[in-house]
Image 1 (cartoon, rainbow, N blue to C red):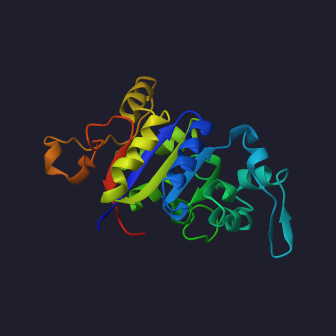
Image 2 (cartoon, rainbow, N blue to C red):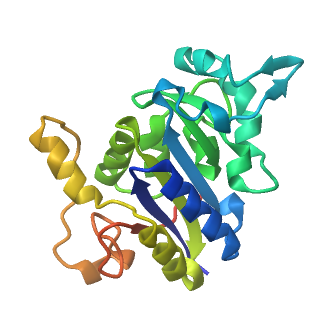
Amino acid sequence: MAQQTITALYDDYEAASTAVTKLEAAGIPHSDISIVSNNEGDRHAGRLRTTTDHDDTTTRHDAPEKASTGAGTGATLGTVLGGAAGLLTGLGLLAIPGVGPVVAAGWLVATVTGAGIGAAAGGLAGGLTGAGLSEGDAQTYSEGVRRGGTLVTVRADQGHAARVMDILEEHGSIDIDERAQNWRAEGWTAPQAAAVTSPDAIPGNALGGTGEGRTRVRSYPNTPI
C-alpha cells in the first residue's frame, strides 16, 4: 500500500509531543514518526539524557555547546535513532545549518544528517524535499523550526493517513500558508509552493495543498529514503 509523508508544525512543543504520544497509542510505530524542535537557549535541556559514545560522555550540560559548533553530532545521534521505549525517549541534540540547535528524534534525522556522517549535510529543507515535500513547503517548515517551532512528520499508508492527520490537527498545528504570508510581509524570502490549478490533479493535493481540505496538516506522496 502506498505511503504518504504527513507533516504538521506547532508553536508549542508540549502540543507536538502530546500528538506524538497519541500517534503511538493509536498504533503508529515510532519508527514512522519524527520530531524536530528548536532548542535555542537550551530550552529542552531537561529532556535530553546522557549519551555515551566511544567512552566519551555527552551530558545535558555540555551537549548544547557542542551542537552550537557542529561538534558532538555523531555522539548524540545514537540517542536520536534509539528510543525503543518510544520516540520521545530518544531525543538527541543536533546542529542544523540554517536552523540552529534542535532536539530531534525519528526517521527524518538520518536523512538530515546524511545517515549519520558528520554534521547535518543538506539541512532540514533538504531532508524534507528528499521525503517528498515541495521545495516551498520544505523551506517554510524549516523556517518555522528556525523561528522556534516544532515539526512532526509521519510516514503512513493510506489506511492510516486520515487518523494521523486528525491527531496532528486536533493538537494545535498551525496553518503554514498563513504563517509564511506573515513572514514574507516582514521581509522573509524563500521559494513559494507550486501553484495548484486543479486540486484533484495531484494525489493528496501535495504540491501546496493540504489533503482532504485541511489547512493545518499536509500529506505528500512518500519518496523512499
